Image (tube, rainbow, N blue to C red; front, side):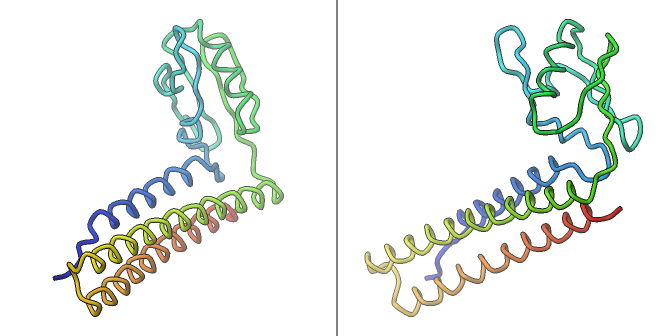
Length: 184
């Protein structure tokens, strides 16, 4: 009997997807609407995602334009952006909010690189936790005599190989993001 690791593979895949979302939210040289994904505004008493109350567009590589569907939200959106960790002062012209992204300084690039390394390390920790859960599952199968000791050893090796494969994917994604951040 071979041990089915589908559940653990799916969890590691989800971790990779989450890491990609984290990386997308880190601003490189270009203005990317995804940097605003974490920002919420109060709308009719509910915390609502910014992209749920406004259209976000990027007319050029360095600018984002936030056009709320309800112009009364302009000041609320402006405050939310100022309170965020973006480090950009929004410009409100009464109809839309413009975010002009300055060229990244060397210091800011290094800060962002540290941030993405932390995201990658968090993803690796999450994957190691999934492997640990898988190891516990395999040990339980052995304890219940559902698998032999040889099958247990093979399953544990397969789990480690799965972790190694996903860790390499994290390292590759990190290397690509670091290269993107350090490109001038």
